[in-house]
Image (cartoon, rainbow, N blue to C red; front, top):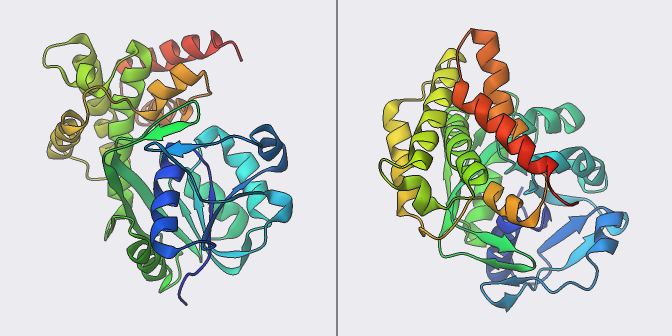
Length: 306
């Protein structure tokens, strides 16, 4: 079945990037943002821009939502419990679900509520979107990597990939999507947390010999060790590739957790250092860099004014 209607939960950097691309290529009415009613009221009247242009994708409250063909979760991990409630109005018998939430645990929580049959595993990577206040800018759209979970029904991944193709969203279908998700987690554990802890950028974290670069690489190497203990074949070549990818981005740009520091929003540290530290303890591994990052980021969050 071809996917014709899309609801995106999350009107942050990732949601704006892929939502506006889809609206441009699929036309008006095919894509909408959906917010829980309280959040919708809070953001009523805002004008959000993407590369200087007003976002034309409509936003509706959950109370007015109806089932769609595809739900894309583009929220931060702390918002998932609320998003699952919002999805009750959007998910019908044949609705596909794709989570772009960072980390490796969100799909399990989605499937616990809505089942694995129509849930695909996916990860977004390579974009350099920065969202400060109401203005989002980007120069690299990155790509979505997606694939089937063991319980995903035949044809669902192909249907989602077909929608991304028509929507102009760069994507790759992975044979081993779990490995790709762990590679992205390794990158996030390094670059997101380092830039948050040091108030850094892609450029400062990539500077050879710097304290930030040492932290960036050490945190990734700990995540690599945990991935291998979990039976996922992440390699040093993957680590080097992710470091090179980061160095290729706008040196003044910054990942989402560094933006969270500026915007004083809750971070995804539980999905990053929290996951690595918990699994490392299970496998008897030492992860001092991630332990320090977890502590430091929690201290910074405690100082937020809201």
